[in-house]
Structure formats: structure tokens, C-alpha cells
Length: 275
Image 1 (cartoon, helix red, strand yellow):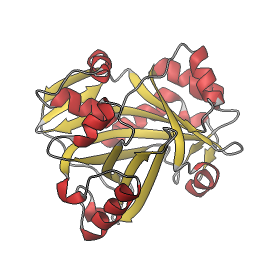
Image 2: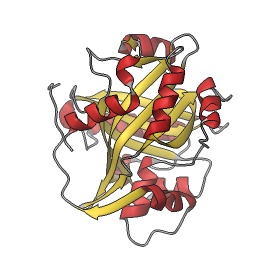
Image 3: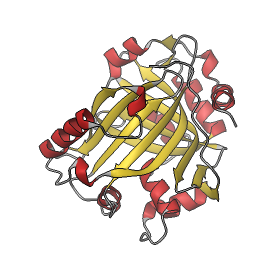
Image 4: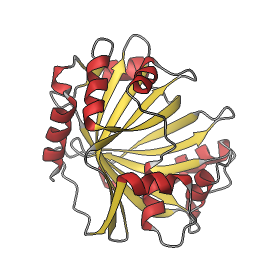
């Protein structure tokens, strides 16, 4: 399925056309949430559509000039021994992720570092980068990454990092502009490494709520729809399924229920705008 077809499929499947739209500036002003608590749910598309319908009174959908989804490509960096992967699987206090992220349709790129604070909340730091910087860490990006990791007490530098896996998906973002919470819905999710792909069952989407320490109204609604939070990281799933010899973990058991693996070349991303 082409990225354009994947976007159309997600918009139709979730009923996104019926929601009120909000600009990126409006969403960022109300719910940027660089310091947040994330909760994740794997939800069948039909129940995800019910979720969107229930949230329509309080949430807007991010609308980018008439486009209500965005294609994401994320290259994750890790040490030779997969230190970031192991820190998450072993639930260490100083967990971290380093990635470059490309917003496919817009040709926009960012370098992002995610860490955990002392209360277990996710803290995300981001640096704008040129489009050609996707998939690598140049000198400026390395300085940024090293500074964030050093401040977070993570004993890793970019000199030890290399591209480890790529994650692709199509995302719709909903925001409660009055209360500053967000809900994202990711479909057509695939993980790529060494010519192999792990793909989420196309009948499911990954729903993430992003807000404060207390569950948001969306979390309570998800519980009423029969969903339960899952511990699931796209990068951790990809490595668990595609890298031979890694130890078993709870996330792999979830992944094997909802993901399939296959060998195939990775298609080049479509971009409609150069940055």
C-alpha cells in the first residue's frame, strides 16, 4: 500500500473527516507536552472509530492544510550491544532513545531524544534538522544528543551509536485544546531492519494518550471500550522481532500476537515537499 493509500485508509477507517480541525500552532500551544505521561493501547479499528466519535465533542484533529494524517519515518540509534533496547526491556531507571524523525509529506526532520525523569514520566527533547539529516547524526546533532544524555545521567555518547532500526507509520493526532491533552492513533505500522519487516495487524491501530500523571478522559473512555494499557514501544518491538538471539520479554509476547514478520526490501519514502 502506498503512503497516500495508507493515509486515505486511516482517515476513512477512523472517521476523521467528521472532526473539527485544528492547526499545528493551535495544537502546539495547547498540548505540546514535551514532559508527559504516555499510555498505550492496541485497539481494533472499529473500536478506535468509536473512540474518535466519542472524543469528537471535546477534541480537534490536527489538520495540515486539509490533510488529517502524517506519514512518520523514524530511524533509531543504539549501541552495538543495543543498550537502549536493553535499558527498556530491563526497566532501568535511566532509559533513553535517540532517533531522527522525518515527516514524510512535509519533508521536515527532527533529532529527538527521549528520557525518563525521576517520577517515570517521559521527557522529550527535539532539534530541527535539514531533510538530508534524516537517518544520521551530524556534528550539530551529536552535540545536542550528547548534551541531553549527559544532563539525564545516561552514560552514552553519540560516538557509540549507529542506526539500528527504522519505524514507519501513519498518524492522526487529536487534541483537547481546553485541557492540554492529546491522543494519537497510529496505523499501517511497520518496523524494518536488515531487509526484514515486522508489521502490525492492519485491523489494529496503536492508540497513545499523552497527558499528565492522572488518566485523561480518553483513558477512561478506552477502558469502557474494553481496552487496557499495554507496555509497547515501537522500537523495542521491532528489535525484539527482527534481531536474532535477543532474550525473550513481555513485549515480544504481545508483539507476536499482533505483528507478522517477513523479508522484503524497504521502499523509499514519498515526500511531496522538499525542506
